Length: 190
Image 1 (tube, rainbow, N blue to C red):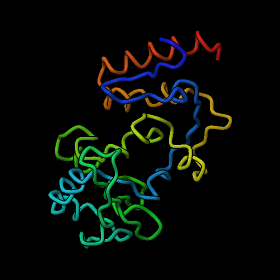
Image 2: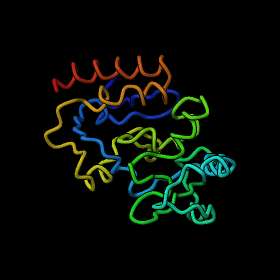
Image 3: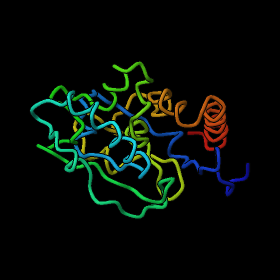
């Protein structure tokens, strides 16, 4: 690959910062406090689960499903071209319970589905994000968190979040990503 050639997997550009960023996280679910943007199809799917989700919610959450999401907005980084943000209730995402657990993920597991079967992609991917057609690091969000950061990080984000990347890119896509990283690191000496 030439210096100017872009890394791509499944048509998605890969920002080389993905290869070199380190990360440290003492996870307390804090990244969920700010809510997340969902694709319109994910929003519709979550709404179809409302009768399963409401009984799992505790007193810190709103069971009024009409208060779960913001108004849809156009965003080309989402498959449908439409993003719908989750609302914040009592200082956290409406789907986050008082123990810091996501009721969407909890529901999937209780029903025997994969833990991320119903969860929005951007929830699964964090600390990665897709911005302007590239897989990159969500620096802006990380900087707001006290339990996660890049400064003083001990582990490469790619290694720390390999399960999430495999889920998103598939086994072959992840293998290609690791090959790109090896190539990039040997070329740049980082």
